[in-house]
Length: 361
Ligand code: SAM
Image 1 (spheres, rainbow, N blue to C red):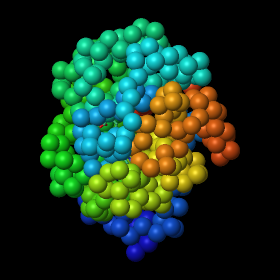
Image 2 (cartoon, rainbow, N blue to C red; image 1 turned 120 degrees about the horizontal axis):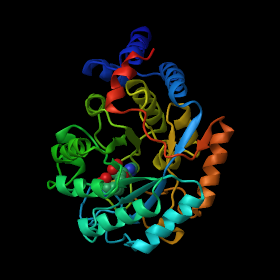
Image 3 (cartoon, rainbow, N blue to C red; image 1 turned 180 degrees about the horizontal axis):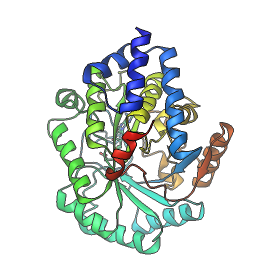
């Protein structure tokens, strides 16, 4: 069995594609030995394209108001215990200024789907950041919007957009979300973002309730088809005030394994070692880098609102200043032989380069 699975890893490494059944086997029958085999290869591919560089993105969590009611999320509309906040334009710009001084050249504006941030307000915000920080990339992560809205934000100066597809399978999606939200709408947003010209990031939670190896195989097939510039995966972690509070968290082991497989599937992709990974294990982010990840996203939000952007329980870094977070990550990366770099860190994984990827190895 082990031999057959190794052959599948070799195929993934050279051909960057697997059949659905092959993905299912690789995920269902994984062993610690096989994981090590994947990590070795994933690290080699990562180092071929990115050396020991770790890209950083400054995360600004600018609102936790949300009109959606995702069953897993701590900032869902129906959590009356969430203490709501919304940063002003001035506060957001201050975060960017602080971040710029700390060497950040990518700002990720993330928030719930907050009706206050109309197209008009978001366009104005993006235009101002673009003017004041012309050498920085602006990434938005503000959920599902119309094609025209995405287009207006792109024209205002946003370069990148993060929208996890959460799970490709429509039925699984419907168990995690209320009926107003659908897997197909979510995926359509991603295709729209791509068509408009954004560098796109997608992804999903590992170990979300009812997730099967078949679901994860479908997620891999979707990643192959979409060919995004970034893939963000992190363990599902229950939040005590949500309907899914009693479900177990996703594991470090499976998250690391999937990071390694994604690196082999999309060799040049930007792959963050997420905060959720650092939350379920104190060395989670370091292990993520060693499994093939190449991005970390320290928090630039003002400390007084950090503890309110609680998507899940026990989230790390809710008490430290941006400078401390950055320094801490820099030390952690240095300790495992990697270095944080401060340029914009654009993806090498453009569509045109997909073919060249395929010739690697
Ligand atoms: N509203 C935007 C959106 O829908 O993309 C951005 C904010 S949303 C809270 C960001 C991501 O947090 C989601 O895509 C989801 O995967 C993740 N998330 C939410 N609740 C989580 C939980 N309990 N455990 C782990 N990740 C969670």
